[in-house]
Length: 300
Image (cartoon, rainbow, N blue to C red; front, side):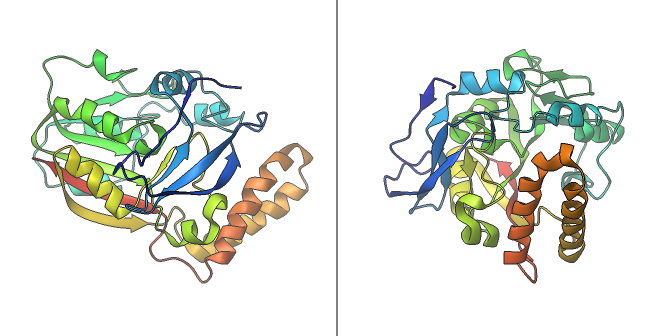
């Protein structure tokens, strides 16, 4: 059982007290019976986990690759296979495309993982830095925390891809990093979208609900409130599917379930696959909007 959990009396984004509980759910640590509530704000449609670990505990859990935040025991082994020096994101990556015609400068990625984006941007001439408490990064200039960043560097671009949902307070996180940015710097944000078709149909069984790996699920309004509070203006908002092609994903997921049925050592993956198949059936004949929110904003 983990300790040092913090509770919220109001929405962590808009501070409204118009909150309702969507129910309780166990954490992604399969060896724990700890349950938390998923709370929805009726004012800004933001979802959050209550209670949540404080930020110091979260840092420790991610550094240790704890099953409370990582989930699968084999996750570390699976990601170890991706630690390939020089691995790059493709040219069609949304951040690469957005920066294609921008002046080259300094880029900072929070939660850079195995460093594919940093490596790619370096090949394009960018001076790239990353923050990650884990041991996944293959790129140079990756630090465990922001206080280890060089004092004399200001950034033209900051990336929060699949990061804000993991922190206790998105506002504190963004406020902490904006001091490293230049005026008119660009921010990239990718988060789970609480207004998606999948979220509304599946509620607590939505695939993105992964306590306490995920602590926040954003609406367009809550993302706008968060960014405006911290002197950012949204320039572009899109939503995307976590999967690529609906029918191809439906077929391959069904095939993987059949495959797992004949692999007893892999049966622990069946629940995950069946849950995904259920989601895709409920979304039939597909979802053109998806369940992830992508935002490009500029600091003013």
